[in-house]
Amino acid sequence: MVLEDNWGSLFTQYIEKNNHQKSDYFGLLRELLKRRRAGVEGIEDAINEAYDLLHDEITTNNDAPASLISFGTSGWRGILGKDVTVSSVRWVTIAIIRLYRSLEAKPELGSYLGVQSLQEAQRRGCLVGHDNRFGGEIFARTVADILQRNGFKVYYCGETTTGVLSAALLELKAAFSVNLTPSHNPLDYGGYKYNAADGGPAATELTSLITTYAREEVKKSAGSVAGTASPAPTSREIDSLELWQQLVVSHKAIHGLDYHEILEKVAGSPDISVVIDAVHGASRIHLKRLLGPAVNRLCILRGKADVTFGGIAPEPSSVNMQGAVDQLRGSKKRLRVGAIIDPDADRIRFTDGTTEISMNEFGAMAYHFLHVYKNKRGMVAKTVATSNFANAVARDLGEKVFETRVGFKEFKPVVGKALVCFEESDGISIIGHTPEKDAYIGLLLALDMVMTTGMNLGEYKHQVEQDHGAYYPDRDGVEVSLEGDELQTALARLERYAKGASVLVGDEEKIIAEVIAIDGRKMIFEDGSWLMIRASGTEPKVRFYVESRSIDGAGKLVGAAQNMLREVGLLGK
Image 1 (cartoon, rainbow, N blue to C red):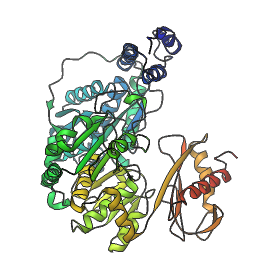
Image 2 (image 1 turned 180 degrees about the vertical axis):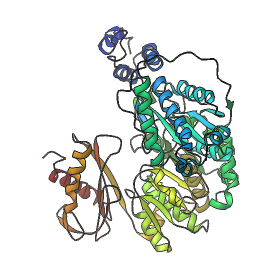
Image 3 (image 1 turned 135 degrees about the horizontal axis):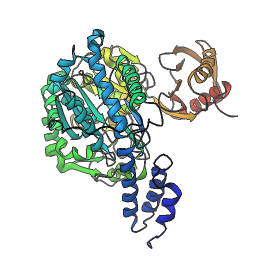
Image 4 (image 1 turned 135 degrees about the vertical axis):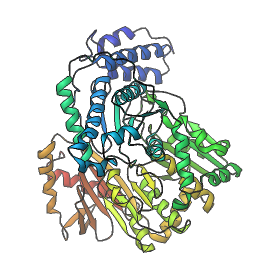
């Protein structure tokens, strides 16, 4: 391609000189990335210049975030430079310090924090890490600096993953961890994840206080310039992946996964191909060490550093999985394990080159595997929006199901009891591991399944379906203009769909046999198919989830869900 010379006009279109508030750096970056994908030469200098401007905004913007800080199920997320800045990260960190200081007046928080005093938290310390996002190291160093100045021991982990941080936290018996990541969100997002001493996502009792305290800090300090201070004590840099490996090895008797044996089996098998798409995320720096001797079977896709993620939303989706699928289809190996991992490696999706395995199926397969092949006993835990495939497996095995609202923190009551905890958005953990979702433990499980059964994941899925029935899930969502109470009022009109009511699905009337209102409204029909409608907790959207017992029925259930939303005024005619 010929060299384009119109970068100046593009910069003028999106950038107002010396005015961060009115400049749209990510609008500019997306235009530049389009040209990079088209093969335009000389584009990298322009992209780097745009990121230099964003760097200046991140480090100098002391205004209040464009959107109110809200600490939710997976921490806090916002737009880099507009919401997530050095200043706003500082305010959130101060809010967390206030959380520990409040223990003196609110000792009941100790049961959620896992420590009983500020002094105990300072002594046990905190782990700080970041994913591959632009500005990640700047934010992580800011957090570490503030914590150290306030008397906390800091273990600095650099670029790492959420699951690895959680395991390292447990191994060190630290008080909490902070990971600067917005998980699978697009390139313009930054984020802040906080886990208390149990290693899992923080309870609502804590995140609500962090939200309150952070907003108070914003009101008190927004617009002011932070004063200079003397250098903070040096934090201790640690190898967080090594601690993850120690945890997995030491808990072999609990979960039944022999880490070293699994890797040796993969390494010694000439008939297996392993393809992992890191989507440029933090897993790219761990995968070779993670698989150790099995690295001779490993092919890493998108394994280079790229804060733009090539311009895609870096989530484990069917579209993003295509590279791994194509790579495996070209393999002559009989056994094929493929996966895609999101930037902070708390989500994973699988393929064997022929069959895609989402967490709806893999969670049930993992439960079946631990129960049948590893002789483990116990319940399975899943979110209410997840496939009922696991319910059928548990029922036939004579075990219980713990079903809860969306959010991995909702599994806290059954940690140490449930063999598998998983959610439909590709997150999983197992007994004896951390209470945080972790792509790496999912990958280890998948490798063990294939090596133990001698079957590809699609073949194993088919076997479990033959024994316990087949389920066909799907999901979708629509943007809505209503928010807050107005949205909840509109959704409340769905209560007319009660037990015994009929719903037209395609050209067939289905009778509702059961309604679960844990998180939104899940309507289960007499034939075992179901649909669920709930408001998104992070976006102005209504999401719906469906599951059919026939291969062609999911689309009809999606249509029925859309019709329900039209009836309550949330979808156009």
